[in-house]
Image (cartoon, rainbow, N blue to C red; front, side, top):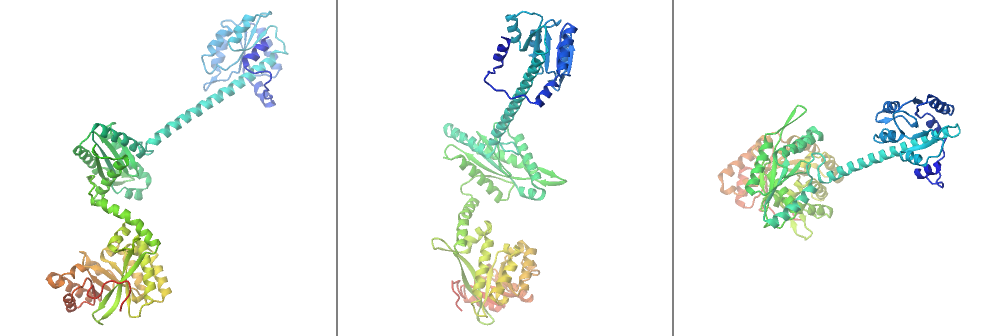
Length: 609
């Protein structure tokens, strides 16, 4: 009967197959720690002897309830009790099995320890059996014990303990795993709406808040402002000190923003060095005031890293949001960004309120629209060259032509350099255009008479490219052109912007035999200073001095001095923008070497000698 009840309480049916116990499992069970407690020393000794004969060696004996509790307390190490089984005789003074079980169930360290209860009764007591089993007693034995039944029951109880421990451990592992998953979920939920570095809200969350703000503004005629902040010259710090220093600065900026605004404002890191602050219920004057306070806060900010100091400033764009505008969250963010862009273009360290008429944005949109056109023209070979003749005063003939680039649109409209060259320089496409010009100019010049030279215009940046020299050298070898017939033309502004590197490349190309002309000479304040150091053969006097030459005595004086100085340095001069015979006559008097302009000839798609 007892076996049936135990089987029922364990929840294991007769048909279920348990894994067979192997030798290593038996060894583990044999080494288990067992406490035997009873009032009679002879009974306790008898039970201990039976277990020792069966191979159990880790046995503790005690003779009262206090002894049992001492064993349980002393067995606790690192929140785990090392006792595996209690064998309790019903005659134990000071504590009953039910009292012991009740106390043990209150502590996690003891809750899983099984109990074998021994009774002195020799008759079946159904009520006592249910009482003991109801208090988590694993087995119930009657005196006298036998060697055939007691040790196997102990082994079974220890196996139950081992199974309980494994289940409990698995439960702990599952709880830990669940806790970790909850932490991961919380972190994921946080990262969805927050910036990992600074802990501020991110752009995605800002767009959600803006949607709610716009709805509120439309329904309640409220106002808000989005302040868009960009750290000036942040890339300098990143390049000089590394991204770790840059990240440290961004964290400091975020903390400064937290100290400047209350929790009612929405603080956001848009990305990189860009931040945003959404402020509700403000006028445009108050928004400008808040932005100016921010600018002043960071204007005197000093960031220190590895004994180096960096003075910080910010550019701030403001988008004031009113109910009479139909905007999306993306519109608000874009316009605030555009206002910040305008602030940076106008000198940085300033505040700018968004205005649709800002010229900087028109220029930016123009560049964005033109960049794909230029790329497409490069891919589809829709660039072309026109040639303007240059007249030699000495020979009375056309001595060379200047190559002028044009671009044919997909609508077959011809576009001039002013339309696309500034865009190409801004968008990083000028390098490809320069190489296209060099390639086509060299292919043309080998078809021309030997007494005709070509002037090739190049941007200043191409002279910083170390691939330019081997390309020119290769083209000279391929075409067999006399290098003295190739005149590279560079503007004075481009030459000055990267003077040393440009000068070095010019010297290398001149070593191949190519000539150089300095365009727009006289337009800069340092023209004569750089002329002394810059190795060119020809000076092209800026057209602003030529246009009104026959009616402006000051221009005449300046042009005469330029020609004289150029000749004194052994250089030739070219006068551009010559449109009238009277201008040409004056230039002849002043000793100019070459004339270029509509009087001599307009740019054409073919060469006419």
